[in-house]
Length: 195
Image: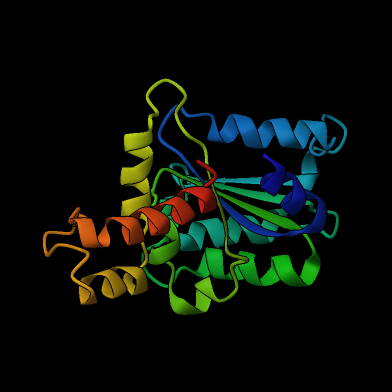
């Protein structure tokens, strides 16, 4: 929650990842309430874009143009995976402007690999902060490890494959020689995902 709070206070962008019902939106709304942003008096400080309602980039960009004001503090993009196809104009413009205008962009998604799906030009403007909200009812260390394995970027997968530490079917090899390297890599990724 501290990472979300920092982005809300200082501006920038963050991706909040979690399964359905894990409390992603609740966590974001709780931070906004604690920071006294978007309350009844200042509702226009927060813009909410929902990927289920805006089915494509162009409609979401048009909505953003209409609502974005000088006093906007936070833009929340829920179901952001909707906007990772095509040119990704919405995310590009949000990440670009968040740095210039000092507002926060909070991207909420169920897709663990959303960051890897961003085009290079979009990813270069993203601040790189990803927070994972575990589902409190079903989370265990094994599922955290699986999530970390799935979130390995192509560079890490290539590195592990070149050392024969990653099997061809995409699963992690558990031979004795590479287990410690894989465990270290996954522990690092679990820490990055805030598990």
